[in-house]
Length: 296
Image 1 (tube, rainbow, N blue to C red):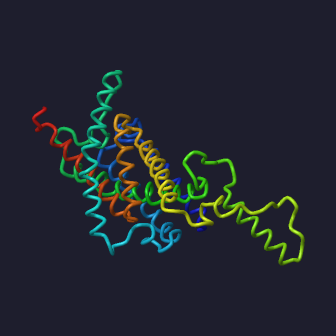
Image 2: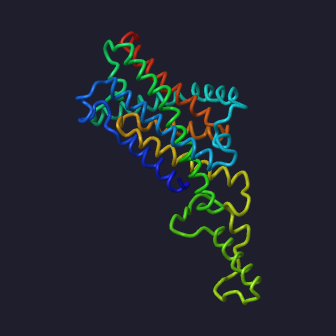
Image 3: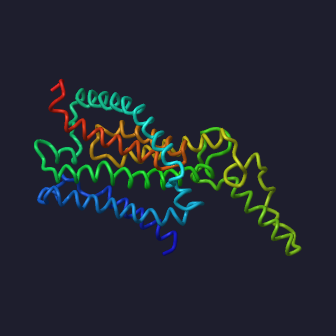
């Protein structure tokens, strides 16, 4: 399978995964909860299995370059835990503020569909499947996709489309100057090879200072701007994918920023996977303990 088709396959699988009916959807009401969870875990496993070979072939250094390497696993996991405990209180404050805003305007506040399935006195098998999906499979699948693929693509995209100075003009509709420079140099080289006069409309290739992007090395400050743009956009896409619980979208966006920063900072997916896994685990633990908390 060509790389283009394999990328399209992952995009389709991801779209199907996040567009599936949830446990509270009309198609799902007639199905047993455990069956739905098994199907959910299976879809997450298929997405992981589709992403890994693409990453191995597309990234320099294979899966290690993708961010799945064991040489510094301990350091990255410790970094992820540190970020988790730093960001979790912030996310809780954002969630509380969002819930207050929803109540003020009269909007409905719902728990996540997986959490609804373990309300009351759920069986041990059901709780185990929820944990397998939300705490194990989901963090791995979502980090491979949103950070490993989407954010990495956006970093490369902004390297080409953002000018070397400043934020503002991301010319999605224009051909970036570094590509124009490469084409102009190639046309000049061909003309010299053939002993021909270069075309009159060729123009001088943009200078390295005008070009930037992938053709010329960027300064750390320029690289940082592109990384920040990629983190923000990927976090927004990540939050939008969790539209089924609107009240949590702002907090999920904040989580996405932390996950993206951890990936860029460490160069490893183990750090954001640790943050994501811990966040989901803490939320499930708090939900199960909610009846016993003093506020109840």
